[in-house]
Image 1 (cartoon, protein in one colour):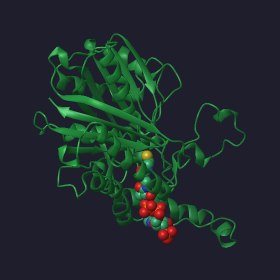
Image 2: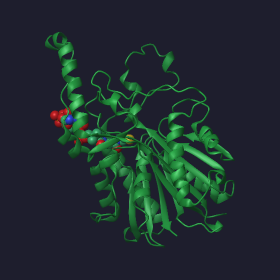
Image 3: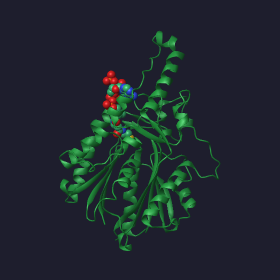
Image 4: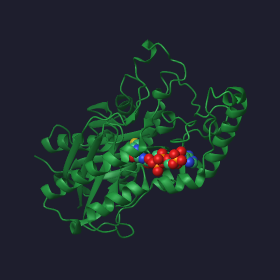
Length: 371
Ligand code: COA
């Protein structure tokens, strides 16, 4: 058996930013157009008038202040309200592969490895832009890596579940150098015309490199990982390959991200708190042993609650860093962005906990120790 260690992490951040004010301005312009185009039906009571969004609500309800996106113009165009991506030829790199490769190069630079050292790539993300061939295999080819690669999807927990899979393979010796890459084009699964959720997501890609500590590598030892799932429809997206076989294809709201936000709060918070508590107990770790919490980045109130529950007190500044104010919810990439940006200052021996949670429901956690 070997000891898996995270030797590098990297983040690809798109160039375009949408602030809450910009988002709300375009959303409200869309609402005004909609209401005026449907004035007669609204007056007759046949359809409901749409309501303006509000930047103060967004910040207070979620903690989000802005989001990075691949395409800003299409999202903010009140006549379109969705990103526009050029379709690419089959022999051109796909969008997710391109973003993933950028994040992997950054992670490899930190670990001091070359792409040819990699012998496993897991593309772990909540959406994949095609059914097959796997995005991971395309990434493998673009990098010139050897070994094998495949895609996996556990929604917001894809990266932590991918970490468990990769760490277990490194531990048992089936691979020496694994990469978990999470390109999340969340802007394409978000309904930007839905006031309840139009502010939630942003685009990003993250990558982590997992190797053997015995090979003289330093970084963050993967002390242990723990995954759990429990079926729920409260976060759901019905899009899939059966779509064309369904009768009513026009404008189906359920073909994008949908959630019962309040129910998610009520059900996921206790599940995550219990999950973390039992993982720490199994490792004989008390809250005082934890230097850092890198949590899933969906909602600030949610993270404040979990931080307090895990530590038994309000976390000190820096103990539970949030990045959602800048990136919004980036699905599986969120906790990895927090880890990537807020881990370099930790001293050898110090321990942190990485934890994601989301659709499924799913919860994935990893105890990491600086080496
Ligand atoms: N602008 C202004 N008001 C808005 C609004 C907007 N964009 N969206 C909703 N509101 C209103 C609602 O109409 C509601 O009004 P009412 O009280 O008069 O009915 C009120 O604000 C509260 O709405 P609600 O949806 O209950 O808000 P919330 O406090 O639950 O916050 C989320 C919404 C989405 C931020 C929150 O539910 C959340 O983050 N949930 C879990 C997220 C999560 O982890 N999801 C996993 C995804 S991977």
